[in-house]
Length: 67
Image 1 (cartoon, rainbow, N blue to C red):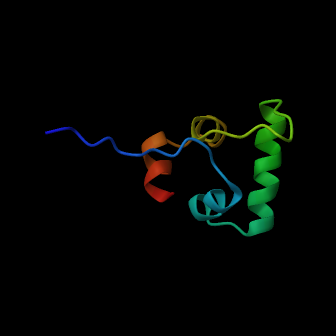
Image 2 (image 1 turned 135 degrees about the vertical axis):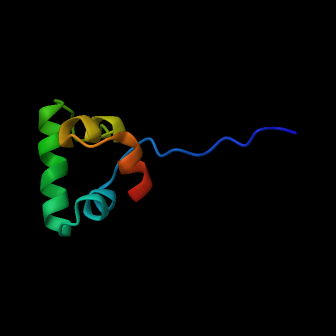
């Protein structure tokens, strides 16, 4: 019997930030912009869940459970 792999989300979106931090859509968008600036990402590059965790200071497991 094969083991099932659990699917883990790789990237984070504004809606995810809204749910995790319990903020408005605008606040989530602004937070995403600040994270993008912090990691020197260009507009077309994505923000990973790990980068979000590092920036915000939350544990990966806690974030994944809220997405």
